[in-house]
Amino acid sequence: MKKTIVISTLLAALTFTGCTDAMTTTKPKPVYQAPTEAKMAQFKPVMTEVALSTRNDPSYNKMTIRAEDKQWFQLLMYRYWDRQITRGQFISEGVSRYPGHEYEFGFIADGFQKRS
Image (cartoon, rainbow, N blue to C red):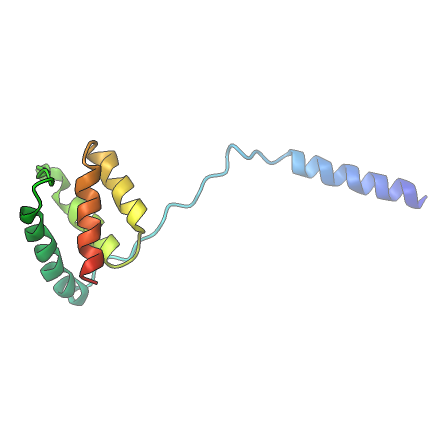
């Protein structure tokens, strides 16, 4: 009798686990904190300093950021500066939009690390 109950319980458990589909589960999209005025006031001088430092590196190839990407780029830098994303995430996200600029995104990331 006990054996039958245990077997039926195991079969029921296996049936329920078979109903889930690992392929349909999605990762929740990360939620980032929007910059406050106070934090933007701290961030902008650092951003300017990092931008100016690119002129001193002959290996840095200036990226022409499209007008529609200016806000995206500023928020990407802000999220990195504010430690909402890692260095790897910063570079990966930047290169996905501007391929071939791994060095430049790495240089910018290093600039923020030196100034934080």
